[in-house]
Image 1 (cartoon, rainbow, N blue to C red):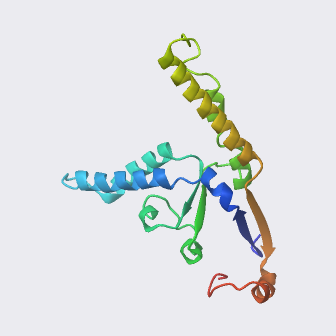
Image 2 (image 1 turned 90 degrees about the vertical axis):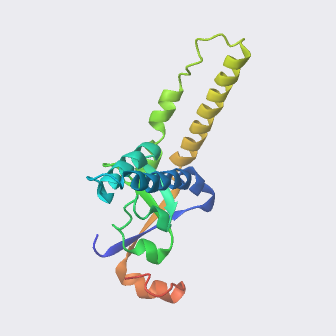
Image 3 (image 1 turned 30 degrees about the vertical axis):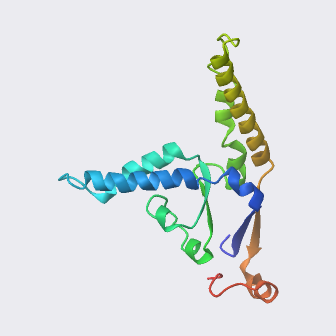
Length: 183
């Protein structure tokens, strides 16, 4: 594999399925406020706060998520495992499934939530009550949306190409690639 590099493609229309920027903005704000709050304590350390922030991030994001490069996220999501993320100015897809490659992880990551949503807390209540009916309908809409999203994810929204590094010069002749994209 040392002689190959990978290129992943995600169609722009599918990015919203795994975009987590809203949640990560909230986690970044949590980190900022926590640092401000705990700074007065003797045993305060930015690292301790960051560890707590990481637990919050894991609670508030899914196992697979997409984010565009943003300095706000730099502390709370370790994208330093790939020095080229910043050079690419781009996208980062995080995969927290330990035993599955990204392509398989995307097919699995809403399955548990779909299973849980099959049963509504409103199922055994009087659906003639307008408030209960409204909550039941909201739950059904949510569950249908989950199944629809998972259906799209199951079609594998990411395409991966493994390319031999010996082809870099040929690729550069055909595709204009900025500066040091191929390190």
